[in-house]
Length: 68
Length: 259
Image (tube, rainbow over all chains, first blue to last red; front, side, top):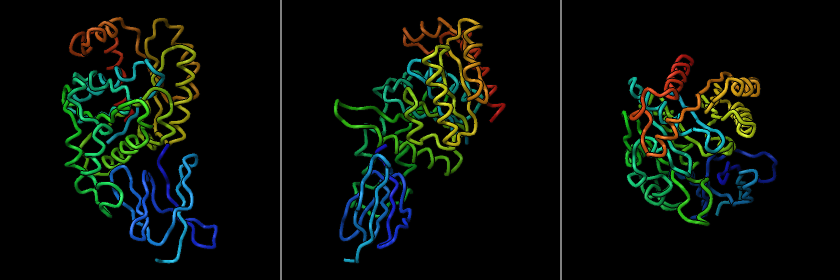
């Protein structure tokens, strides 16, 4: 289904942290990544970049970056 | 509040059984909210509401997004405090006090999948389940087949009603549905064998489903159901004495006994 569970990888590690579930849309704005669910609720995530979007596994993977 | 999903192969009678069961429960004084998750959108008509009077969640997506938080990046960290007000606009009062929400359909060829509206229904059901106890039952009428289980909508629901005809193809879909519902942690699996004409057909169906269902019930073939459908009439209002309704009453009693 076109709905993502979002994880973030800590830089240099293989450990991933669950950030949000049921996410439909993501957008970079003002140095943050904004994740939106079907209710329109926004989860902002600081200092990450979108690493992978995968509708097969229904995962959206974020990667930590240096703060802008 | 109990969350209950109705699934099965196309044309087996999901919507007919659901709509009558919902009305019978409402007549007993239970507060029933039904959500039509089938893009065919027949549930409204089965509850006596012209589809033209329905504002669907999918059909009014932009309005809903505006109400519930806007597009990505427009409003950060929106809460759910306005959700109840927004929801009222999508609830239609149907026969006997049953409340109806319609997910919606595909508005034009190439419009894309229904993932976003189904995701919205999933959040909505979770929201209603975790909020004030305003409903005794939430019924979800799913689209035909088993895909809805892949979407996780019915996760940890209280009951999965899998409706089937006593035919090999329909029973295969039913068995698959029962397995998937179990995977999702649905607490109780009830198979309903619908349109049963012969006792031996029911016996064969029971043999097929026995390993997968916690309970197997049946509704006999009833010409009144087809006649009412042809006229666009509601079974419960037009032929309340009919045998199919007696069987649905039995389903209600079993359901309440187990809930």
